[in-house]
Length: 137
Image 1 (cartoon, rainbow, N blue to C red):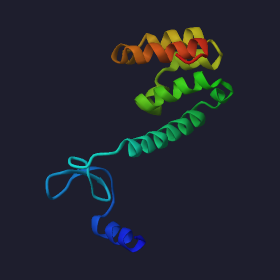
Image 2: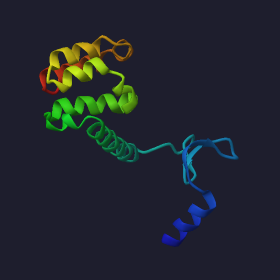
Image 3: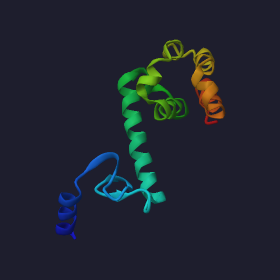
Image 4: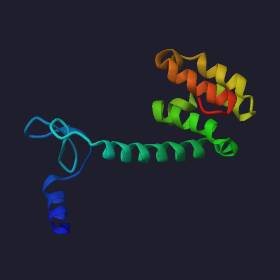
């Protein structure tokens, strides 16, 4: 099996982003045909776990003061980062300034007073409530 895997890696090549193969199919990785094969739930959950780990690292690097927060609050910011990326989160300057001072009430209000909140509806409400209360929504 290992020799086959190595041979397939050479033959298929690796692409980290989706591309159209010579047969006109959306493809990614080492020739994964997304149009016909897609992803299994297990594969999607593995990708989700990896993406959450990446978002967690980004949050803790960008905002080390959040490391003292409880799980519900820090997870809310990780959720936000997963949704819009760390650079998007950094644009919430007023919310971050409030939260850095442990003013979670105003931090949550600033999050809700944004274009992001109007675009995401209930997700924004849940995240803001987790920030405000420190409890899972």
